[in-house]
Length: 83
Image (cartoon, rainbow, N blue to C red; front, side):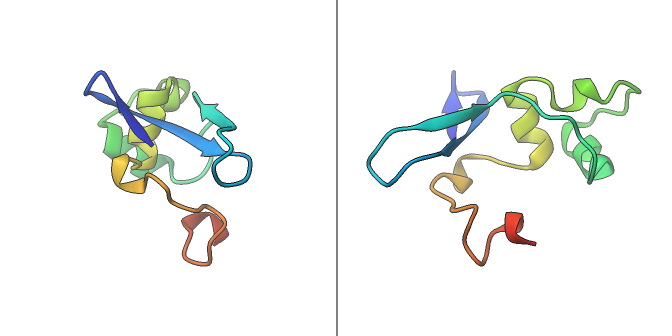
């Protein structure tokens, strides 16, 4: 996680071993689960769900991700991804 232009949180996932800077930058996603919570986080209640998570800043906001998640291991026992 990092902040760009002091405004938008960007989401990326490290895809290699520690100290090898390979990452996947997540730009958007199609929302299926948790749509109502994403709507609340973004204050977006339009019909077109693509606008809910289109673009890296919107995506991070919809998922509730910010710089406090920097370094978070999505494969750890405590990860929300392991549910």
